[in-house]
Length: 70
Image 1: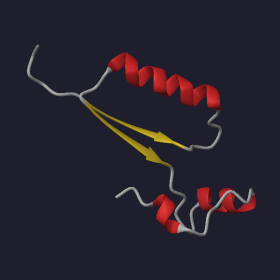
Image 2: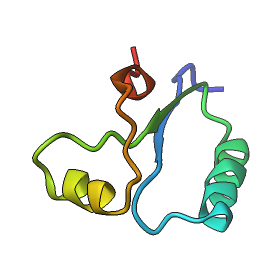
Image 3: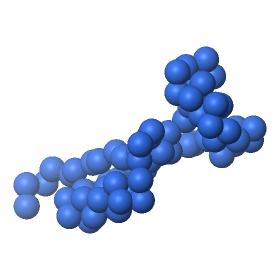
Image 4: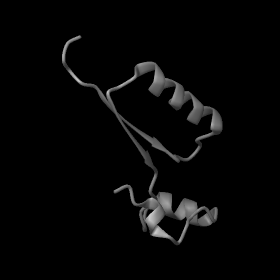
């Protein structure tokens, strides 16, 4: 043991993501077993290409509280 803690951040909800890629990410989290893990959902910011893409696909929620990671 080196006394160094490990930290890892992951984001879900990227374009092209599938159940399979989500499961691969979950397996990797358990494989590497970091001391601290942060998991975020993708937040499409108004005016970005990602926002436009989600809007076209009717994939946006009007309730911004669901995007709040705090």
